[in-house]
Length: 227
Image (cartoon, rainbow, N blue to C red; front, side, top):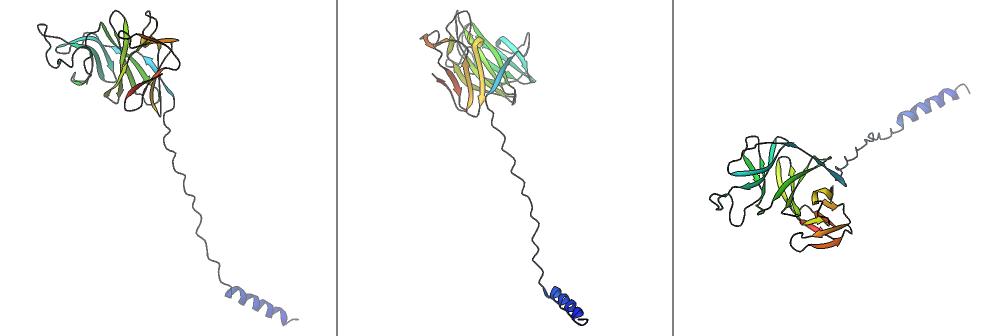
């Protein structure tokens, strides 16, 4: 027995030396999850606000009706003055009348909308997106009656024409901008109206309809009526 113990110990030692080492596995590295894509804007409400009014803004040859200061720029609505009753540049026979101008801090016109012809009123109203700070400008139009408004997008110092909102509430005491609601989602910008009934093409066809989710939608390409 005394000789057996050392022999067993020796065999055990030899076995341990000859046993192949297990292949070491590389430590498992956790692959970081991909950063989620920026969530698309979902039903973000545009809130109406009133920018600072500019008084006595002088633009050569332009009759300023309304003017505002907006993020270092100037927004003005009005029309170029005819000379001796005649249309002169930049107006043309096809492009004249009330329009919206964007001016930089040097009072240089960097954008002008197409002229909309004559109107007694062409007044800008402003609505801001709380998520991306984009601004919608709707120029309310009127003769003796209100007849819709033109919509523009102001984004990072650039102006873009969206289209004409050819609609009014069926109540001559209030106007489009009194009932207008604006939201933005991944599908575009939606204009809805807080009124039970509406007038389509006011001043021309005056078609009265019930407001069954009537809306205008700007789908990143054009502004269309849905009814």
